[in-house]
Amino acid sequence: MVQNKNAGSDRMSRKEKETALRREGILLAARQTFESDGYFNATMAQIATRAEFGVGTLYQFFPSKQQLFAEVILVGIEQFKQGLKDAIAEKTSWQDELRAFVSYQLVWIEKNPEFHRLLYEIFYSPIPDLASYIFEIYKDIHKETMGLLQNIFAHANGNDERFDPDLMSLMILGMIHVIGDSWFLSMLNKTPTNYIPGILRVITGGEISE
Image (cartoon, rainbow, N blue to C red; front, side, top):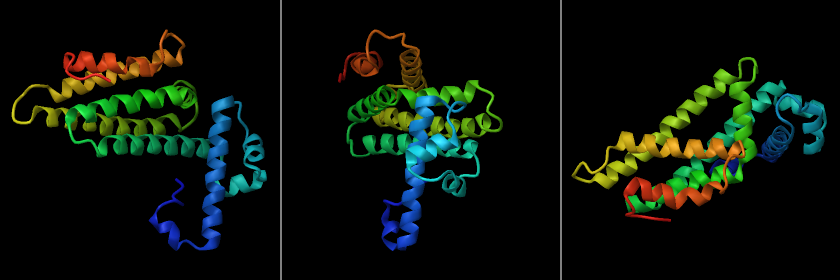
């Protein structure tokens, strides 16, 4: 994963910075190519052309298309996870935390439909040794995401038992996942973000809204 923008980047040598930038450029070109053409149709030559590098340069960073694809998915998931944490981090009330959580998830789904399709391609296509690896990563992020929701409802409860954190978390994630899948399959008459107020009303009985 590219980390050329963190505090440690200031201590990187010029060569290390150039290497990190090349890797970042390859990953960006790879994601764009995979999203437009799919894993099976995309080629390393196409990715190299988009990244403006030789094919040999790609293989210096990633020995195979499969490994490059796995890294694209991993980086995308990590970016999603960090963005979600950041969206919630500065909120002080549980209502604001919940609103930020639901909004971030549905905005991300709406803005990244092709990445959603790539996840489908992994889980439902015979890509050797890749589906199980990504599934474990996906399972971990699902646990973390559910943990964030549980903490929000624990915050809401305070000293009483107003909400069941496990049940509420399952309900919200279930609604978000169904909206995401239906959006991907072009089955919705509205965009995902249009469902934000409704989810908040259902979960809290109208106490908060978008």
